[in-house]
Amino acid sequence: MIDFHTHILPAIDDGSKDIDMTRSMLEMESSIGVKHIVATPHFYAHRMRVADFVHNRAAAFESIRPQLEAANLTDIRLGAEVHYFEGIGRADRLPELLIQGTRTILLEMPFLSWDEQVYRDVYDLTAKKNYRVVLAHIERYTELQKKLLFSKSVFDRILELPLVLQINAGSFEDKKKARFCDRLIERGADIIVGSDCHNISTRRPNLDIAKSHIISNFGETAFDIMQKLSKEVSGI
Image 1 (tube, rainbow, N blue to C red):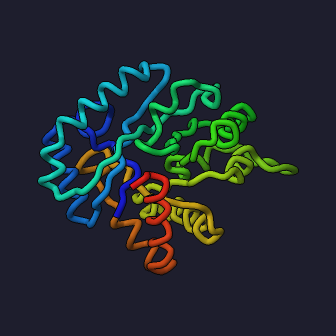
Image 2: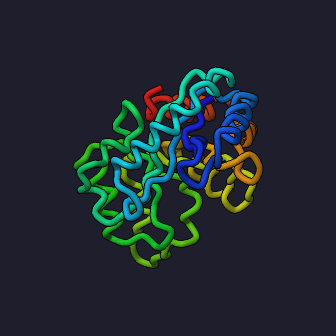
Image 3: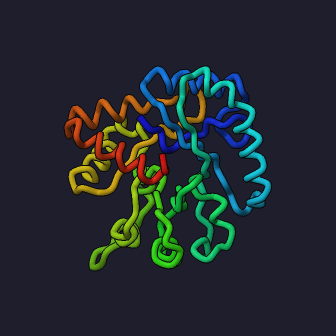
């Protein structure tokens, strides 16, 4: 399996606190059948420079090379979970934050009701930058969106763009979020799953939860399609 969304690199964000925790997280990934990982530490444009982020990410990755071999993980790709900021569609240094070797960006959207500016920026990323945009944990934004009576909400319009929607595996344990995710699957949306793991307890590697739910409700083919898409957008 491919875990597309992780905070597994040590001491770089609010994920793994040190190499020992990363070692345990890698062992957990391996134990549930994950062979490929995309490391996506948080990037906040208002907190750090791109150059500093890239340097810190590289250092964190180098520190865990021995653990990767020990955990029998064949591949780890470097990327970022890029938090939305106004004007992101025109930002110059985004290529350094794409998933390694691809034109894919994992985008964390604002936790508020999306407006026209948000729509224009996401549109620019897809249409003008020609990036493959993956919206992180799409199920976490729904409660914050305005419901419009006579026209589509910005949320609905954004979902009509050529995007990939990433779902957190743990959301299948929440009935309301699971219903939303199931509707996306039923609609045939382009979906990939990730653990969004941060630690070994409250937010552990848990892609097996998504695999079990999806296969039970939609069949093995549905999960295989998601894994194939995950492989494509991550360049694995």
